[in-house]
Amino acid sequence: MPWLLVAAIAVGTVATVLAAVFVAHRVRGGPGKVVTQQWIPHHVLRMSTGSADIQPPGGRAGDGTSEPIRIKAKGLLERRCSSSSLTIQLQQAEEDGEPIVIGSPARQCEAAEYLASAGNRLSRRELRLTEENVAALQAEFWDIPLNFPDKCDIVGASTKNRYKTVMPNEHTRVTLPGVNEDPLSSYINANWIRAKGLLERRCSSSSLTIQLQQAEEDGEPIVIGSPARQCEAAEYLASAGNRLSRRELRLTEENVAALQAEFWDIPLNFPDKCDIVGASTKNRYKTVMPNEHTRVTLPGVNEDPLSSYINANWIRGYDNEERAYIATQGPLAHTLEDFWQMVLSRRAPAVVMITKLRENGRIKCAGYLPETRQKATFGKIEVTVKRILPRNGYTLRHISVKRGKEQLQLQHFWFTAWPDHRTPEDSEQLLQMAAEVEAARRDSEGNPTGPVVVHCSAGIGRTGCFIAISIGTSQLMEEGGVDVLGIVCGMRQGRGGMVQTAEQYIFIHRALRDFEACLPPLDASDRRIN
Image (tube, rainbow, N blue to C red; front, side):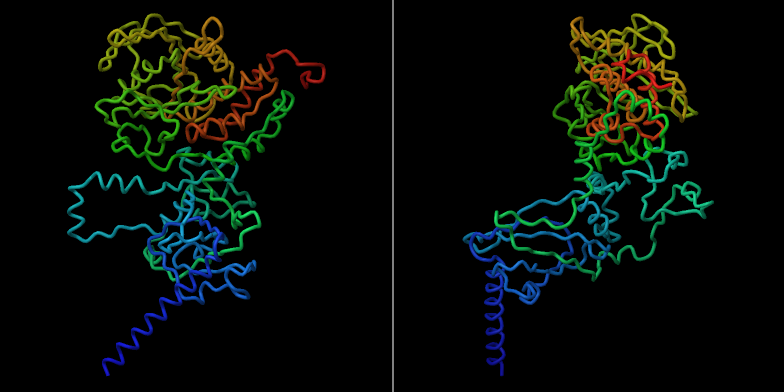
């Protein structure tokens, strides 16, 4: 009979509602029981709502037992064999009866989950319409995490990489048949790419176990699992260091493998994306973008974010001197005015250039200097070379920069002795230039007058070497020791990828050893080792 069917459905509905209310009350654990959660965003998250799924085994929810509550959620990390878990706390309900959700996602967990689940299937009609909305495609693209590996653990692998910042991801790396168990002989910069079954992971029936545990007596939640990689990277860069005495610095020459291992442990800290639409047109290399929190900005035009954009970052100097350096890329042909605008607006007393305009047949930097002692105009900025002084390995130019009534006198150091695809054999020329740059950036009383603008081609490799050596020489003179690891970590906090290769990291130590050899001994116990 129809009326019996209606009655049965009504009774079932009431029973379900009562059961849900009962379960929600027991999970909250009564007044005062606060719950936090680390949230993992996922558009296919499905969670069971039956009481059996949230009832802790061996005890009642909210009765004070420490047995965790387990909730199954489909399509997340368990399918990748993760042992991580989430601590979720429930908070006393508001008047509307809904629990309060607290917490924010961990970045690396977001990146992995995004790559595993994101998608935007287009019909043929929708595909045709994409031509009318390029901005949406750009925004969609910049939301995709880059997923670059932080390092390669194989010593010497950088010699087999065409580009210093492009390394194979370890879990899908292709290996060659090794020779005599030598890891380097089996190394090739290649990865397996899956062609079949890519979409299956978005419909996975795998599940994730989320654990809820009783709070400690002080009310703080128990956090289970390990921190996300991005959190580890930030913590490493902020705290890592390896201070060397002058004697220990000399001994680094005998243990190059230790320096290589130390270098590869440093997180790259490359940003995943740039939120300014069109910024890629001002970047020399697609994978080298400025870190947002230290990005140098230009005076904007009509509130246009792109007009204020330049691929450059502030870098701290010795003793955490704020904004001591600006690390930037070699300017492009259409960003020459931007470059000089940055130099002028930031009142830079010196510009350091460590690249040729063309190397190995490839353009590394656009010419932004007038020839000989001529004058050149870049947009509204007039640049004049007043004097040229040849040095050993580099050239010093005295330059006048003028825009309207605004004028700046600066020194330009162009280091041309850096060989292609390797580090200099001798550090004397670079050390001499570093000393002259340090003098140029200070007034007669020894106070800094502005940031030193340093660039190579990408603005991270040779640029990082020069800044690290400059900071290291100051540290050696002031403290009688040096922390190269701490210096590089500090630079990468400001600009990702500073000091690109292990060879450059070793060269920094070699240059500082050469500089230390010229310093007088601190005391009898620090006499040089023969």
